Amino acid sequence: MRISHKAAVIIGAVAMGLTFAASPAFADPPSAPATGDIVGTGSDTTQDVLNGLSAAYDATGPAAKLYSWDATPQPSTITPKSGCASINRPDGSGAGIAALNNDTAGCLDFARSSRPSNASETNLKFIPFAKDAVTYAGTSTTTSHVVNGLSIGDLKDIYLCNKTNWNQFGGADAPIVPILPNPNSGTRAFFLQQLGGGTAISPGACVINGFRSGTTTIIQENDARELTLALGSGQSADDAVLPFSVAKFIWYGRQTPVADQRGTAAAHSVKDSGGTVVNPINGTVPNESLNTGFTSTTLTRNVFNVVKLVGGAVPSKFAPIFNRTGYVCSTAGQNVVANYGFGKLPTLQCGY
Image (cartoon, rainbow, N blue to C red; front, side, top):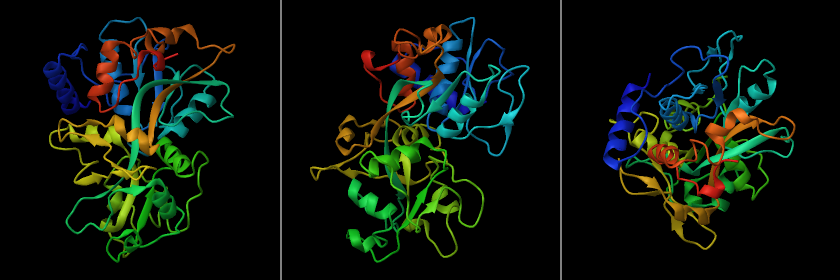
């Protein structure tokens, strides 16, 4: 269990007067959930906040408890509920949604997703519960060549391999090493779609695309260690960039010490269409928060919990948790959301 993470949550909750219970947050369910419990898998981006929401909601004593399986460690298997068959642990929004669709035994109830629905996903309801943003991360060392304040167009040129040297953006004469995470990553899908103005671009051949160079090991999303681990021979982390959830970056900064997945990386500012360079984060560690002004860059997004529709409607078992009047959208639930680095959603935008 992530006792150290939960300790940080509780300290923050006490300091801010938040109203959720001080029960342990789960990295995975502490034991096999019961058949009637509400169980999900999927996005790395929202796994930690769902752990916090699960612990807080379950502390209220519901008949059906809420549980969420982490996206990592990989590779591994999980048994979603008592009596269910083991499955490969879904890592990423796409993997979680696929596992939900493939489940015919009631072993999975929802998928975490950091991307919105596709046109073909008419059998699913994507239920928004928090605000996030995506930016590009790079090393923050004094030797880093990554240029701050790139625009969406600049990032598109980088990931299409139209521009391959930092001196093309006013930086040092050094090769750009663009990295993309796990092919099932919702953050990846959202990022590529926004670079394409609504239609996802296809990454160029210069991109380290989803798998560490020369291996079949996936690049874990929202993990700055991949700036080194994903590289090929002769490449330098000081030249590398990868998309990163701002909320996760903030959450990693609230750990003591700062989590390895953030390390000393920088979450860079982005230039909006009006030419203004906008920082995705307000404040400093450990009191950072999502900058609502980052919306001008088009890189802000909602994140979702996804459920199967039955007869065109969301089954009633989800109402106490994901409905607009349910726990996740309540004041207590949204306080948990904010404590994990995400932005709160207005009442009429949260839930279903």
